[in-house]
Image (cartoon, rainbow, N blue to C red; front, top):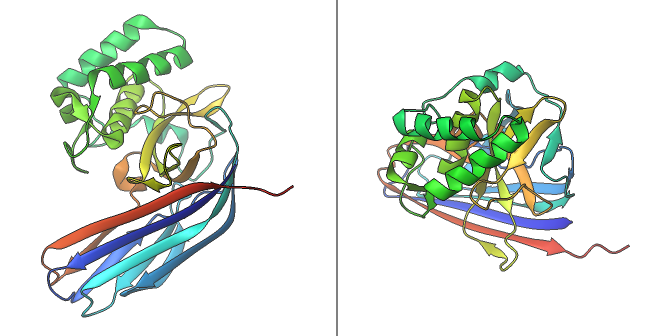
Length: 271
């Protein structure tokens, strides 16, 4: 499947910026079942300073905000060819050892509510793949998908306790629980083409778990499916903080407003 993507992120600042830096993880990965045909990043109110690969083999672009800017716009667009691999990414790569994906983060660390969920999963299945599918289904059943109820700082334990969250929360819960079950897990941020629309609400998040003999397997907990050709992997990490599309800091800007426009559509490929 050939997907055309256009992603615009715009920041409006209450006061002109004295100094600012933004770290962008917005370039899709070259990986199994995914080929980048072209990808362009354009900036208004900012300029590119550095491009590098981090420890998760994410392409990271560091941009500086122009002094005095009251608005910054980052626009990405390009085309990606994808294949349905039934969620299988394959063998581990990158500079981090596999065991590092067993360590918990502040966002994924289980508390009492998550430990109860983990105990229920452990009691159901012993096969690792069946156990992971049971975990995904149980999270979706117990934590209602509800927008505008959590923030980027919400922890997995808080989302389970409150019984509501979004794809980011579902992914953190899955990662934390899988790690407690002895299964390496990581957070994935990227794009998902919803079948009934071109304009998408936001970037998407899902999880990957590593199973011996198979490698990394994807689980979209919020939608209850394995990632297919409609998904584009952009960045991975142990949690949101290591795979976030945009992070950064600014001085002298005061309050800021964020606006995101995202369009993903299938392109006809001529034979």
